[in-house]
Length: 151
Image (cartoon, rainbow, N blue to C red; front, top):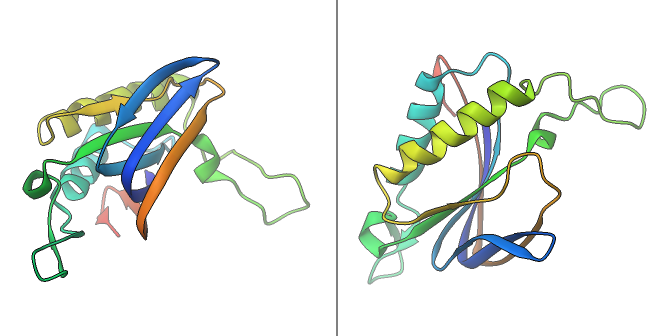
């Protein structure tokens, strides 16, 4: 599982003209699922992300978690995180999970985040989406997880 996390002041995602998800201060998460990912991997990833202390405290140190700042999450599925550009100029996505598996774990991941965070919004799996955000910092992390853990 791969996640690109952006700390945001706000973010939203639209499919055609419909806003499918919108948040204020929190995390915009682009989530990619591999074929060998499991619920265990999704649990670890969601738990880690929701407990990350990357918001500033009163002294400006990155010491606060989502819960500490009443932050929100917007999750957007993005299989292109598994692009392999080693050969030629056209990416291969063979490392991405099948649509059925990826959608199942995408929904599962969002539900797991809801155990930690009051508001979790989503894009629409498999749709052409437009994402708007104001990156706060900027602060962007790339996390990868498998059965061995999160790095």
